[in-house]
Length: 179
Image (cartoon, rainbow, N blue to C red):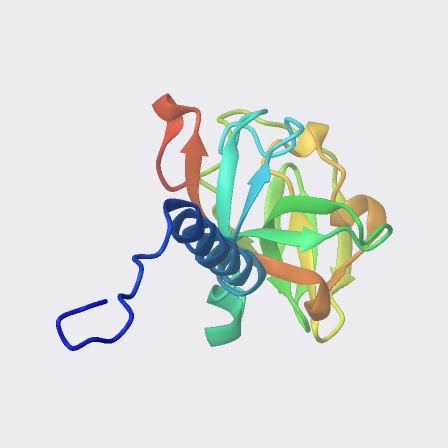
């Protein structure tokens, strides 16, 4: 009994507090993973040198809810031929644009586009010209000679875009923003 004669309230048990904390953490993790940010592992060398095999990245799911994807963004998307798989590539062209590659140089709508993120001296096959359908995107890996990308399997519809790469978080010596 307390001073007023009422039954004394017990402090919540340690187990109950731990359980509540774990439940709150699980709910927050679910909300963050589903709506805000998701982590991905880079499984191949298709984005080298920008992203390395076994890099872990965070992708912002909010980025493209607030703004449209832009040329040059590193984008996580569901693979159009098997939507259970995720791919990470660089967005090269948006719907309505014409893409061509001549003498290892990228052309969008007939204008050469500088790609300072590519390794010096990289040579790759000619491609196109092709026109990207509306509400779709043309994606290429930075390691053009070792990348399965839009040249092979076509365009990425808008509804398959997951998010924008915002941070490499592992390994520690590579922490930072990929460009």
